[in-house]
Length: 221
Ligand SMILES: *Cc1c(COP(=O)(O)O)cnc(C)c1O
Image (cartoon, rainbow, N blue to C red; front, side):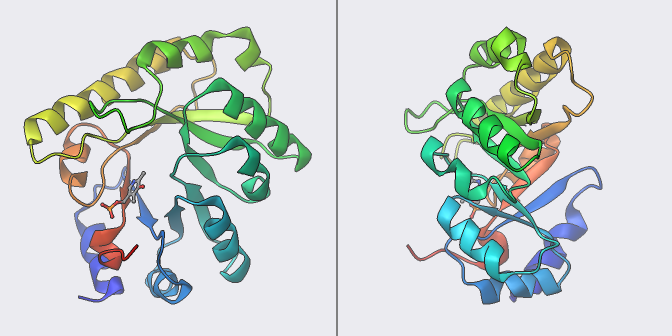
C-alpha cells in the first residue's frame, strides 16, 4: 500500500473528534510530502533537530508536534514554530518552554505526559505530580505556555486488557485534572494510541492518535 492510501484508509475510520498526528520520525521529506499532498497537515517527530530541519524545507502550513522526550537545552530550536509539545514531564521543562516562547512572543501549547505504563523505561508524571503542577503558584506565573491536555503511552505488550486499563487510567486522570485546572477551557486533548492500539485508545476516550508505521511503513533505525 502507498502512503496516501494508508492515510486515507486510517482517516476514513477515525471519528470526527479524533485528530490524527502522522508520526514521520526517521522518514525522508519525500514520504512526508506524499502524506502532505494527500491532505495531512499535522506531523509528529521525536527529535528536535530532525523536526527543525523538516520544518525548514517543507510548506509552512504544517503543524509540527514534538512527541518525544524533550531535553531542556534544545527547546530553543523548536520554540519559533512548534505547534504542540506532547511530552512535558517536569516543571523545569515547562519553565524553559515558557522562557523560549516569550522570546518569540508566542504561547506554546503543551500536554502533560502521564506515566501509565508499568515499564520503567517510559517517562511521565504521576497523576498526583501533574495535579500539583497545575495547582502551583509557580505554574500560574507562566503566561507563555498553555496546558491543553495529557499524553500517555501504554506498556509494550500483547495483553489488551492491560493496555485498556492503562488507557482508562489516562482518561480518568484527564477528567480529574480538568476539574482542578482553573484555566481549563482549552484543556481538551487526550493524546493516546499508536499504530498497534489506536482503535482501542479511541474506545477509551482518546482525542488524538499518533500513528507512524501504519502510514509510512516500518522504520529502519
Ligand atoms: C514512534 C512513536 C509513535 C508512533 O508509533 P507507531 O507504532 O509507528 O505508530 C507514537 N508515539 C510516540 C511517542 C512515538 O515515539
